[in-house]
Image (cartoon, rainbow, N blue to C red):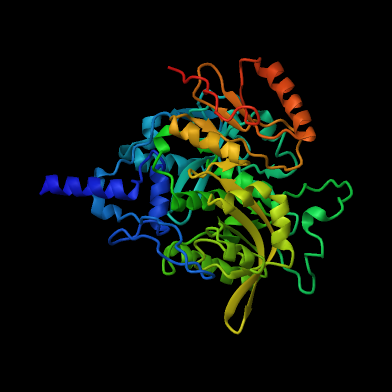
Length: 499
């Protein structure tokens, strides 16, 4: 019987993409259980249809209860992800090992340490990165537990093998790309100011006949700069580590994990006094699941408080008929608990022009993420919404953001070859800082920037020359990788892995 049970567990894990510490920590798994991520009963698959046209949504396996699987699911983290930490309280510093942080034998003791440190102590990661590497102690009410999180905009300080690492050079940190747009608070959370605020004021229409990006620039101000929706999506993707890839994640990153991580990342972001996660609507696989219930509860709370909301979801799969309807209302996957969101005249055409590559990828059958700011209304007991503003972002089949078809080719090839890499993201869309398309983090000695050149128009060629000069000066001609797709259809070999 024991052998049969082990075989059954193995088959189940293989069919449902097992949840292990290759993807989640113990505390993350605990929080997921509390929030209803694990459903009891047999694994089910999402066969819901889009409310506009009858096409399937995600084909997502739901994972059986941990109680059925027992201790055979591994919950021990990968040693390469976790590093010792030093916690300093009242001038007294104490170092805590990887084993103490991760072993179930020390679970209660580690929780007590974090509880005692909450709001009082300074915590620093001991990975090999540079800089303070501050960590924040966070409390999660849904699971009544404490955990560590990186300070906002500090991912570049950590080593490439650290779970808190985020790619890109110092320009993506507080002194560069996020300056003035993302305001890091003393507790490690981040405060933002959106171009259009989250409070609905009676009698005030936030949208004129022009879109936000078409409006004239505001005069100089000492107030915090406003972040665009695309920049906010970039930040959340980065904070959720979804722009990172490691070979041992292959087969383990799926839609439910992605949007659970985004929800956790939004929990540390505030728009004014509002916690962003309270205003966030994310895909729900079933109409009667916990994610759909969460969406409905957030909608009701926002209606009562007269607050705008944000939707982050994949666009529903492309059909010619759906694109015609997209001019009227936003078609997304996992719409359960999310009010039908109506587009303004000309809004879809504007998105087409602003995000040509993302729309082209969507038409070609690739995944495209939308972030939409909405105003919810209720009439005669029925809820609907108007889209105030929106932005699009194309992603690969492994959820890595890409900005062109050539980038997508490189991202998938990196995954196929088992490489560890990151995709730097530009929170501030107007920044002129040079950002590589990808960064390899598994090479000997240093990170290696990867650059894809896919066009040959005059302005692009000028920018290409600037980038080439920058990379040659900083890394040397042999210290960075490039692919000129206008000259060579084949992707050049990547720099070798460290042995």
